[in-house]
Image (cartoon, rainbow, N blue to C red; front, side, top):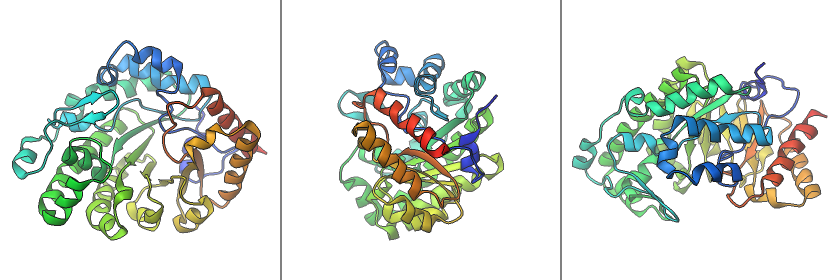
Amino acid sequence: MMNDTFLKACRGEKTSYTPIWMMRQAGRYLPEYQKVRGKVTFLELCKSPELCVEVSLQPVDILGVDAAILFSDILIPMEAMGAPLTFSEGHGPIFPEPIRNQAALDRLIVPDPDVHTGFVMETIRLLRKELKVPLIGFSGAPFTLATYLIEGGSSKVFWETKKMMFTQPELFHNIMEKITECTSLYLQAQAKAGAQALQIFDSWVGVLAPCDFKEFALPYVQRIISDLQDTGLPIIYFANNGATLVDLSVQSGADVLGLDWRINIGDAIKKVGNKAVQGNIDPFALMLPKDKLRQRIQNLLDGAKDAHGHIFNLGHGIHQFTPPDQAKIAIDAVHELSAR
């Protein structure tokens, strides 16, 4: 029997308790993950379906979350486009050949997701055979993916990205067009392989002013979500650091809006209206003593009582030094307190 509480909440249907999963739940804070990761590089792990299945299942088995998320990385399709990608300990992802002119962009392809990222689709097919909870597939959002290609990796100020937006808007939009086409096909392939919901991660979009979000980022998210309508799957759009963008994010077409912790959930729900919300406890609040953590969770559940649907989650990924026991306390508390 499938526990479909998460999918019901996505659709705004009544649930007997509030479902919970955690961003980055398959990852570094779990000793079981570290054991798998100790044998391979990060990219090797991402490209090995059997290992991806193992680490995707870990938080479901260990913590009892209500949804699994495919283990992968948002940059996998960018590498498939032909942008060389490396991961370095301590520095994260690096694109040694940044895309800063039309010639560099022209060298990138729009990959066939089944051919160039078939390992992701195989992971989804294998996971569906094992899981008793829904499987979330995902991608990065075009703006966030573009920042990596343009900057050549992570950035604090996004100088190259914003410089291009404001001085070469046509080039910037061309990059966004190509990434959008790639991402749309990639998510459609995940749906076909068996993903039961899809989340679009816009990790860096919070660096934009609302007017620039509206011009340079939102139309591309809207296009992807519109392309995914035929799948019938719930779509979650998560704009990290996007408390100032909630009213615009509502226009994305997503069924569920992911919220970070910088906004009061009740205030966000008023702006969101007829959509479900996902979030939004500060990941570091998992470090609170048990009674304080339970109180924080109760307050959040109370704040979300008028939501069209609520999926409990962190406001961003779980921090790698979080003790798994603390995550388990939070998950059990959400289940217990919301069922009352």
